[in-house]
Image 1 (cartoon, rainbow, N blue to C red):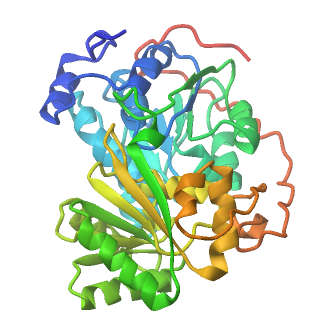
Image 2 (cartoon, one colour):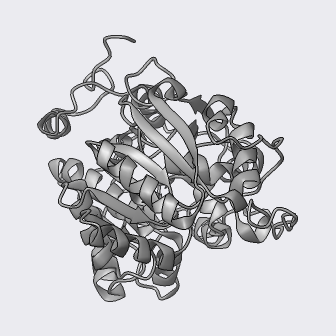
Image 3 (cartoon, rainbow, N blue to C red):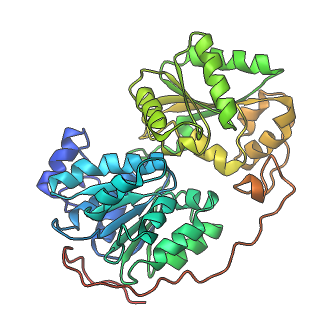
Length: 428
C-alpha cells in the first residue's frame, strides 16, 4: 500500500482539501490501517503510540460517515483530559465544517451551560468522562442516538480512575454501535476493558510514528544524568535548555514544584511557562498556545496537565522530577521524537531517587544511557500506574482489585436517521 492516498481510503474531495491546506498529503500508517476497517462498521482495537496520527484515524471515519442535519449527536469521542479533548476538537472541527457538521467539546473548568447548548445540537461530541456524565444526568445532552464511540488514550483513562464514569456513559449508549478503542497498550487491564466494550473487533497495531520505518528507540536519544544537589540539578537543566534549539518540555511531579521551577527559570532569563492543575482552563490553554507558537520556549508541566500536549516541535524532554513508573516515563518521553522526527529525553537523577529510576531504566533496557550516572542499575520489578496502587514512590503497595460489574450497556438503540450506511455490523 505504498502509494495509498486519502482518495483511495474514501476521503471526500472537500475533506481532502482541508487536509491539503494543513500540509497533510498522504495517510500515516495508522490511518491506512484503521480507515478501511472503521468504514465497514466493525469495531476496532488500535495499539498506537502518541504522535502516530491516530486523531485523524478515528476522526476521518466519523466525519465521512455522518450526514449533517441530525437532531442529536451520533458520534462520541471520550478523552482523559480537557487538554486532549480540546485538541481533538480543534483538529476535527475544520474537517467537520467541510461537510457541514458540528463538533462540540465538553470538559470541566468552564461554563456547563454553554457546553450543554453546543453539545445538544452537535453531530460529534468530544468530551472528558466526568463532564459528559454530568450533562447527561442533568438531561442536557442525549446519548440515545450515538452510533460510534471512540475511546482515545484508553490506557490513560484507566490509570486516571475514570472507569466508573466510562462504564456509566457506555450504559447510556445503544448496544448496536461501533466502538473504536485506541491505546498505547492492549495488555492487562486495558485489554480486558477493550474486550468488554467491543464485539468481534479487528485488532490493529502501529509499532511507531507516521511515515517512519525507523523504530522510536533509534530516533529518540534517552539518557540519565546524576545530580549531586538541588542546585546542581537546576544548573544541569539550564545547560540542557541552552544547548537545545527547539522547544523544551520539563516535567515536575507536583503542581507547586512546577510553578516554582517556572518562576526560577524566568528569573534566570529563560522564557518559561507553566501548566498544571492549579491553573484555570483559560490559563492552561494560553500556556499551551504560547508554547506551541514559540512565545515561551520552555514549558514546565505535571504529568496529567501535559497529557494533551501534541506538538511536533518539542526537541527535548527533561524529567526534572522522576516519573512515577515506567508508564509515566514512556508518556513523558513520547512528547518528543514525534511524526518521524528525532528528539532527546534526559532524566535528572537525585541520589534519593537513583534506585527507583534505575529500575525503570532496567525495565526499558536503557543500560547504556544509565551507565553515565555512575549508579548501579537495580533489577526491574513490576510497577503500577498510580501512587495509590504502587509506584516508585510507594513500591510496597499492591493494586486493589477494581470493582466488578459486567459493564454491559443497556439497550437504548434508536432508529438511525442521519448516518451514511456503513456495511453490516457484527452481532453480539
